Image 1 (tube, helix red, strand yellow):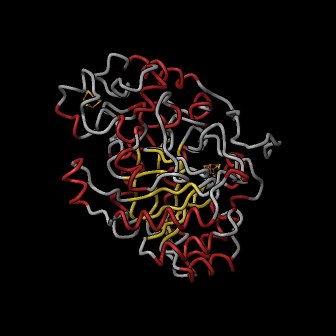
Image 2 (cartoon, rainbow, N blue to C red):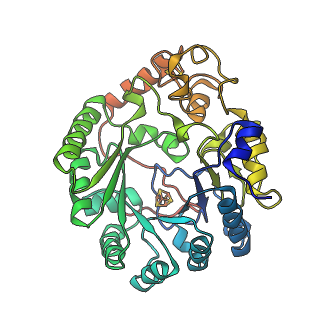
Image 3 (spheres, rainbow, N blue to C red):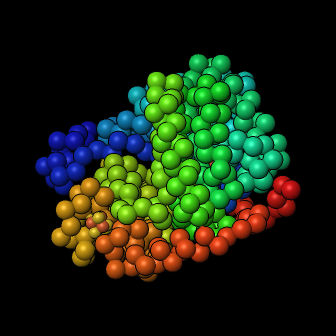
Length: 378
Ligand code: SF4
Ligand code: SF4
């Protein structure tokens, strides 16, 4: 039976997800210390097959999903990427490739475009080459990314540049916006680091001071106005210096779902850090069944799970109590209000952590994201 949003409404007051984030693989040549992948990375031999993924995308399209975000790790590490994109296009999904660019050649970019790729998001680690290579833990990555950006625009694909901001590159947030313009991007995402997964492990090396954050935020906001009509700037400001949390994932189990390389289906990419949640897998359940009935998706849907101060707060349908994974990481309990909120009884923990970053100095030492430990670039 074909699912429709109306059918969801009558059963669960639930619409279809807008987007699916497919982590096609955790393999990646880079080692970004803020990577949102889990600390325990899925090995290649456990990854879903091509036919598993095509089944998942067919089911997603039938369910009413509009966007397929093809991510990783580095999705180009999958030799079947072209087939996967062709299948997504076939079933009517808008495809967005989220890539480090490493592993792509010009021929492969053209092949992906011919297969029906709609959009590419290319990450950069900095606008300064030596710093970018050091952050990525990969010599020559920056130069390669400049070439990939050119191949993407030459193939006629719309380009978005993604930049994650932290202590080592925060002084160049504006330069990264200007670089994105130079590369022909239509959109740039300037996102301050979120502290879970590898970002939490490296928090002491990544977190900028409040003053550094304020200067960078002001510069990017000014560029938003100055470059209106030239480039769209999506600006994700740092949590630890905010008064209210973000509506994490647009609400738990409300807008999207993530499928890991092995097929586990999660409400957000860090959800596996929350103990006792039961995640269903696409190996033995359909996307529709998981979306509607999975215990993990239903755990924090709606407002019934909330405690005070969220339960009686007028913002509870705006930010949904913030991020469950951050609440767990900082309070030990995923049902608490996100401590970023100044109304949370645990908000002092955020202030404590933010204050520590004021004293940080020197060249940050990273715990690089690796499947196997290797020597980082100098
Ligand atoms: S954040 Fe860096 S290490 Fe993680 S998948 Fe992206 S490019 Fe690879
Ligand atoms: S109390 Fe809860 S719902 Fe209200 S603003 Fe804070 S996190 Fe959001």
